[in-house]
Every structure is written in C-alpha cells, then in structure tokens.
Amino acid sequence: MKSIFSKIGKLTLVLPLFCGVAACEDWFTLTPDTAMVAQDFWKDKKDVESAMGACYRSMLEGGFMERLIAWGEVRADNMIPFSPNQETSDLLNLNIKAANGYTSWGDFYRTINYCNALIANAPGVQATDPDFSPKDLMAYMAEAKTVRAFCYFVLVRTFGDVPYITEPYLDDSQNYETPQTDRDEILRLLLEDLKTVEEGAPALFEENVPYTKARVTQKTLWTLMADMYLWLEDYDNCVDYCDKVLNTTSNPLQLTTALNYSNTMFYSGYSKESLWELPFDNYTNNNALNDFYGGTTQSSPRLRAYEGLNTLFNVGNDLRYRDSYRMENGTGIVLKYVYTCSQPNLLANLTMNDFSMGDSRNRHWILYRLSDVYLMKAEALACRGGSADLDEAVRMVSMTYDRANPLLAPGSLIGQYSSQSDVIDLVLDERQREFLFEGKRYFDLLRRLRRTKDLNDVVNNYLSNRYKAMTTMQENVYKSKLSDIEAFYLPINENELRLNTLLVQNKFYMTSSDISKN
Figure (tube, rainbow, N blue to C red):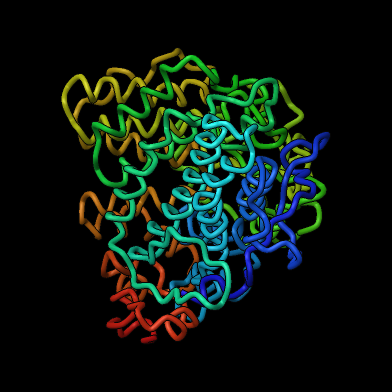
C-alpha cells in the first residue's frame, strides 16, 4: 500500500526532544534524518525508547489531530458552521467526495507504521543489549500495540473496512498493495493481540504524572479494549474490562471535583481523572483545536456550538452547560478547552466576563478519562437489559451526572428510569453532555445505528434538527444523503484508490446518485 506511506519514505528514528510530555525532561520524537535508517538502528534499549517516542510524537502531528475532530465531531449534532474551510464545509453539508482531504488516512497509517516497526524489531534488541529485560520488552510492546489498536479503531469507525497491516514499511522496494479487511474482524484481531500484552503493560510510571497520563498504561489498554468490545456489542467483555479499570488499585483514578472541574480537566491537563491525553504545549501546538474551536489566534473558528444543545440540560446549573459553551448574540461560543472560568461560585449567573480565553494551541486533547469507563459500562449494562443491569447502569450514569450537578441531591437519577429503552437513551444523552466537543459524538451515534439498524431514529431524532438549523439543505436532500448506514462512513480517498488497485470504494459512494462516483 505504497500511497499510505508515501510521505514517510524510509523509516528513520532519532533521539531528540519530546517537550509535550514533560517540559522539564527530554523525551523522544521523530525527525527526517535519512542518515539513520532502520537496519542501522535497533541496537539497544535507548533505540526502543526513541522508537516508542516516535509513535507518540506522530499522534501530535496536525493532520492526526485535525482528523480526530473532523471525523468524530464535525458531522455530529453538536456543531454548526461558523467560518469553515471548504473541506470542513463539505463534511458539514454531506457533500462528501473522495477528493476531500479529510478522506486521507495517511497520518494514521504513519503512526501504525512506526508501531509496526517497534513491534517487529524490539524483540531482537534483547540479543544485543543485556540491560533490555523481558519486562522492558513487554511494556514497550504493550504501549506500541495499544497505540496501533487505537489508530485502527478510529479508522474502522470512520471508513469501515480498511487495510490491516502489521508489518513495517521501510522503503519503496516493498509491495504494499493490500486489500481491505472486514471492519469487525480487524477489531477482533486487535483484541486478541492486546490480550497477549495486557499483563505486561506498565501499571503507571512511578513519580512521573505526565508519563502516566500521556503514555499508555495498563488501564489505558483496558479502557480501549472495553471501547472496542462495546462497538462489537460484546457487552459482557465490555463490562469486565471496565471493572478491571475501576477495581484495580494501582494507578488510582478519581473524578475531578465540581469546583474548577472544567479548568482542571480541559485547561490545565493531567488531572486525576485522565487516563490518556495528547500533550500539546508551546513547542508542539494543537493548531487543530485552535482552528476548529477558536483561541487567542483565531477569532473566526470553523465551528460553533449548536443552540439546540440547550435542550440537553434540564437543569441550568449543570456544569457542562455552564462551562462547555455559551450562546452570545445568536452564536454558540465553545468554552471547553478554550476558556477558563474565573467564578468559583457554582450558584453564580455567569456572563462572558467570567471567562478568559487562553491559547488553545497549548491544550491537551483527552482521549480517555474515568468518565469514559463509567459511561461505557453503563451503556453495556443497559444493552444487556436485565433488571439489575439497568439499576447499575443508572448508578454509573449518576457518577458523572452528580458531579456535574453538585446542587442536586446525589443519586437524583436513581429510580427515575425503568425501561431498557429509557436507560439506553439516558446513557446516550449523558454521553453527549459529558463529552461535548471531545470528538466522540459521531461515533456514539454510529454505534447506536449499528446496534438498532434504525436510520429514522438516528436521522430524525438526533441529526435532523442540526441540519435544519444550518439552513443549507432541504430536509429531503440531507435525508437522501443519510439513506444508508454506509453513508455514515467516509469514502476511500481517490489517491489511495489509484495507487492501490486492491482497494474497493465504500459501496455507498459507488452507487449513490447524491454523491459523485469515484
């Protein structure tokens, strides 16, 4: 699959600075130094450390981060356009063609390639470096396999069937024309692979909070596995892995308290709730967040919050309502990640004067936190549907709901929901409230659609109002463009199709009269 890696060239790994993980410490990154090619590289433990740093550093690249927002948030019902570029506008308006830059998956396969290189070469380092112990090897293998699995999980939820590649691509002599593998089979293979390393994953990085939050730990691995099991509708395994995260005492986690909840979680970073986050700073900027949501250098962001979100919050004092966005002069300003709140009084009626804009380019991007675990377990229990399961699902939802509503009596949700459908809807609504603008909503809706196969439910009950508010499409037009579950995935990029003849275009984009054939 030559085009996937066309921007990589030969795999080259060196040992410079990874300022995003710990500003006071050197760590690892990747630079295009062709003097150090792979066959001359894998000699000792430091080379493996550097290679692991390259895997993480590639996730901080602008194209990777842009796609986390574009793929997981733009087409959902949280956002409307404000000042989008053309490619974002086309996603928002379902004018999606295989030429759109956001159909390019190269940034994710680049990270996968770095992980594949480490997984293939790290075992051989033990023969040349006696200080590289079997325990060290297993820890790095667990990190690399988790990063690789996360990348594939995002790709599968975005494109459906994709090429599944586990060997590193080093130079142009290799033939990487590779067909797609079934989307669910990829996840099953990844889950079996993660099981082989889960016991060797680092529990935490002793006395190094930044590493414990920015690198993969055992609880990160378990959380990703729970998420994949939830997607596959394997609810028993999802619950089991959530329980591993919740019940294992090493690397303790706790919900951030209501006071300064948003500032601590989304502005400062490395909170006690965080499981895995991408650490941006002055040296490695989160320009995607700045471009999409705004910040001190971007007065006209691509997106604004959809006013209809107000209906989610029956209680005006919900902290997610207070601190995630604010409607001003008819436009929804995104606060999460961008602004800090200077008013500690939870009873105060806030205005924009109580919020201070910061440089969003320095904000960390949270991939998983403790709230994910509570709400994944809640969804799995609700879908299992037993009476005890439903009660426990509501209790799990209460963990995040009570934190966000500190003026209500704890457990105010308990006893209010009895039917399975009501609890499932409660979980979906709570996930929307809790994870606003965090790149999860579109995948939540697609997961619901995979389970129910009910297009009318997802389109009419969730997406329609957003499209009506955009006033750029008539109802019959956007409904025709969402008339097939395959329309919820993106097309394969036209360049990939030309250069890899074994690829098959996603079928909706081959047959739809609404979107050009590719």
